[in-house]
Amino acid sequence: MTHPPTSRTVLLLHGLWMPGMAMHWLAGKLHGAGFDTEVFSYLSVADGPDRAVPRLIEAIGDRELDIVAHSLGGLIALQALTDAPQLKVRRVVCLGSPLTGSGAAAGMLHWPMAGAMLGRSARLLREGFRACPTCGAEVGVVAGRVPHGLGALFAGFGSEHDGTVAVEETRLAGVKDHVVVDASHSGLLFSAEAAGQAVAFLRDGAFSQARSGPAA
Image (cartoon, rainbow, N blue to C red):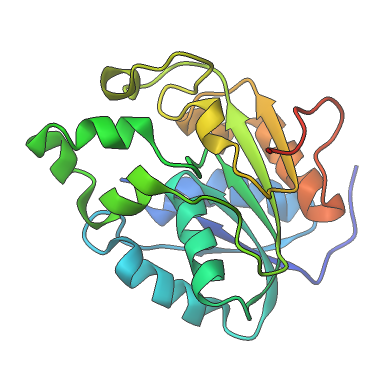
């Protein structure tokens, strides 16, 4: 089904150790659904949130837009909304973002060589947030439950996870909606189900069909 073009722009943010081009498949799906798309690239290890967040705030400026972000990108987006609550961001979709803190990141920090791979993003990944920013933006979270990834080497997951992030680590108090799909952490970027849920939330402020409900 073809949908009419929308005046909304969706800004896409990639995760740790990824280039901006990692978001191109998903950007294509959003564009096909009628959204204008832009990709925000940053150096996740060398720069981290200290440099990426101010750049993101500047890139948004006075524009009204939405955000779709993968993993660390979701943390960067929420940090920007925390630091600049005046931003005119309507909705944010976080894909596999460890919003309450990453057990895998915390585990990596016990090993100096592994911890160094997190660079300047280590603290934000380890700590996450206590609650959603009170900035007016609606936040939805898509978590994965296909356990393919190296995160289990450091996290020791005891419940559902996507190979890198536990589903429970994506449940942040104050998010508007939360859904779990059959995808691994990196697979969320190429999942038709995850893309469809992102489109649903951007349009309606809620995920479609069966969903796991708001995080409390």
